[in-house]
Image (tube, rainbow, N blue to C red):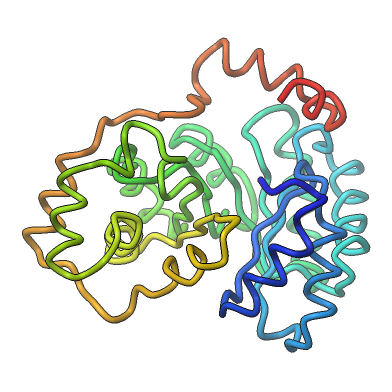
Length: 268
């Protein structure tokens, strides 16, 4: 997430660099600043793809319904291109009904989930009218979501990667395999990792606070990784999260302490 105080400037820089998808969330407490940047950009609203997320403290039908309208107000828009349920906890079924209703009303152009593991995703998808269209999950070269992606494909649910650069963990920016591949194409480690995700059909949302890095992160269309490169990068998979395991009891207890957004910001 980007601090609210920095959001308007950074989103403005991203839009001027060429970005057209902006990812935010109720829990980032920066929807207003994102809305300000989009409004001031001079770019047509229909040319910008806005993503936001309902925090699980706003789950349940009535609370989620009200929170969607509040997000629309803060983002200063008549519609949100993609709205996700942010976590797989609490009354996600009531919240999903609110998303379905807002989708039918045209307030949301597409709806999905975030951080839903296969059991969460399949359970929801098999018991609702409109299946999740997107699942935003931690996805990078060290956590490749290979088996979960098979389930998403079965449900016609697109995968969107948060943390596509692994948040710099596990020696990401010093990885010799990625560096060596990068030298072949004259590209950075980050560009190689992002291109690898794109070639797997993964939607990426790289985050940077430096405009030169923003520019690098979208310069991905002028090279294609070979089949050998793709297979070699697959060997980096650890098969597990580097950040949050949503099946871990301690992780769940931690999130329960963050049900209220105000409590989240007191503890992180």
